[in-house]
Amino acid sequence: MGAMADAADQDKYYISTNNLIEGMDKEDYPAYSDLVVKGSYDRGVQTQYGGYEGKKLSAAFQSTVLGDKGSDCGTNKTLRIEITEGNKNLFLYRYINTRGSKKLTELNSENIDNYIGKMVSMRSPLFCKADNLCNKCAGNLYYQLKIKNVGLLFYKVGSRIMQLSMKAFHDSTIQLKEIEIEKYIT
Figure 1 (cartoon, rainbow, N blue to C red):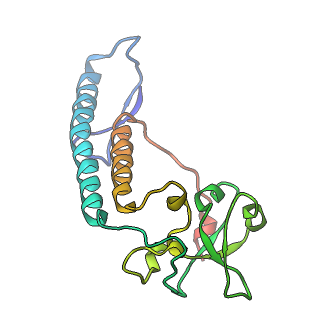
Figure 2: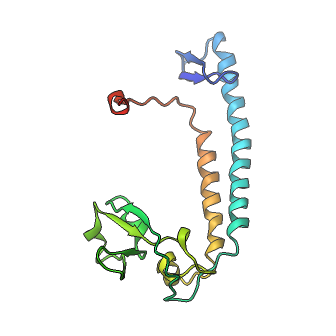
Figure 3: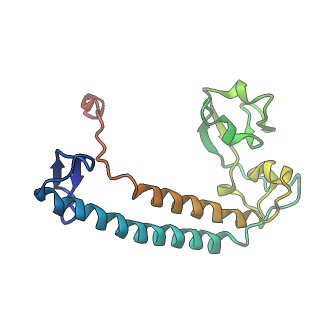
């Protein structure tokens, strides 16, 4: 089984040299019992946490709706984002300010590869000044999907939080990472 966190003190670990197929020694019983209790406890608490976070998000954003297609609040605030091969699909149909121009450019499948490896100034709902989210800050994806009440989509974020928290209790391994300390010392 290997290293298991001590249920009473998360800074302590118990090392089991046996596995369930070979059988446990009598000394292993408390650690394995703690593991079972911890799994059940985490399942209940983490599910509760994820569900609560989802309800808060839904309540906070349920009235968030899009403005008319083509609307623009005129904000000059943007997010600085680096477009990478790994994240480019997250930003499709969003608008960026192009350098040297006040014109907004929509990122789409035809032009997004031109921006890979570059920092862009992206319009964002965070900075929208309109009563309803304007088209230029929200992007075109919601309009293409014919979704007007975008706030109702936040239940998906809460659902994802709950899924991740529930997945966490299935993993009782102890994670070790190797770091290069020289990078962090000035």
